[in-house]
Every structure is written in structure tokens, then in C-alpha cells.
Length: 289
Image (cartoon, rainbow, N blue to C red; front, top):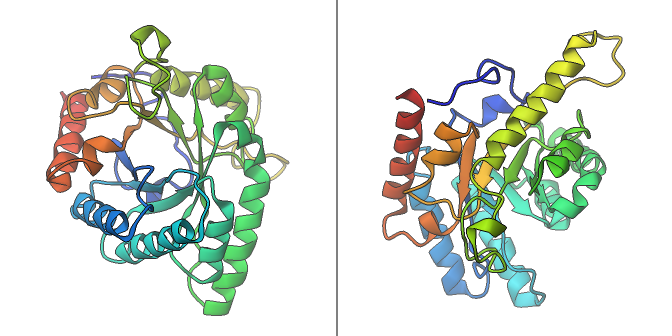
């Protein structure tokens, strides 16, 4: 079992909405909105995968292709996934599309936030303010409970992760850290030497908690009202890139990531529900063992 000083440290304030670690995120395939058939197939796969509550985060991520048909399919898929959340609780974000998230929130559709691309991570504070403003207005009109926006981003180095965390307290709630293993999502990385590897997510977590501890030890109190900038614990760290049933435990149990994110291991499975159960079980078993 992986153990270090981060095990007992605080986690982001949105943690209560994530469920229990180790966490599992599922991303849709790039072609999920190319046709009505693909939309329906995606809905079925996500519905099966989320049946037992094992999926903590669903990311609607599709290829950046323009066209009215694609846009309509994406909107239909987002609404279907949002409706699914009423039966099977999970967090739902959209990759790199603030406009569709704003539209959904304005229409009281239960989307939780957005995943921001790595090179746009510096925009997270302004994106958060924009989304939270819309949420506040929409929920006031509907007299329903206001929930915090979830924003994530990706990183492929310690430096990138550190820059994102330094945006705190308006920074990301989670990070996708990779590329851990060979994957179709990054065809340009064709050898193990070109990968960041399964240890990077754990090293990112260690580095960010070191920064957090240093801030605390320099006389800052997270509950102090005199602080102009609240010190937030680091974001949740997901390992990503080539994650499957055989290797999902390694970034978590061996190297200390908070969870894993996957696409094809679940979306291509004949029985997504079984795959999710297996992945959660093996990650938990390795941690407890």
C-alpha cells in the first residue's frame, strides 16, 4: 500500500460531492456526437457504467468538429447525461466548451462544470467567476440549491501542475495527469520513453502538498479571516492515458494518485458496469492490501 504524509491531509472543499476514493473518471469517445447512433451508444455505455455509483466523474469530451448536426447531437447528449444524474449520481463536466456549459446552467440543466485545456489553465479563475455568476442567477430564479462549480484541467509536468495550483483558491478542483501508458489518444507517443509514466500523478500530488504544507507552516491559517487569499488543499489527482483493467491500480496504489481516468476501457467494454466494478475493486484492494 502506498503511504505518505499526504494520506491524512485535507482535500478540496468540493470533496463531499465526489464520493469515496479511489476515484474513477470516464470520458466519452471523440466521435460520440457524429451521429444519432453514436449518441445513443454513448448514453447506453455511460448508463451501464454509472449504475452502481462507481463512476465519480463523467467528462463529455468530443472531437472539435464544427457543424450544426454535431452541435445538436452534443446538446442532446449533454441533456441526456444530465438527466441520468438524477438517477445515478456522478459529477458531469464538458471538455473545453464554456459556452455550452453556460447555456446548460442558464436552462437549469444539471451540468457541474468544465474541463479546461492545459494551455488555457490560466483562464480558470475568470471562467469560474463567469460560471458561478450564471449559477447564482439561475438558481435564485428557480429557488433551488446552489452547488459549487467543478473545474478541471490537464497537466503533463510538475511545472504545469504547480502553475495550476498557484491559481488557488480559484484554481482547478481536479487535475488529469499523464500520459501514463501508451494510448490512442496520444498517437504521437509511440514508445515508453516518450511517456510521462504512471509515477507522475503521484509525484504531482506530493509536490502540491509540499507547497500546501509550506504555505501553512509560514504562518498562514486556512481559517483566518485576515487572509486575503484562502489556502486551498491541492486538487484531486487523476492518472490518465492508457488506463485499463490491468494497470489502473498502479498509479493509485504504487505511486499515490487519487484515482484514474479512462475512455476505451469502459466505453469499448461489452459490459461497462462490470469493468467499473472491477477497476474500483482492484484499486481499493491494492490500497487496502
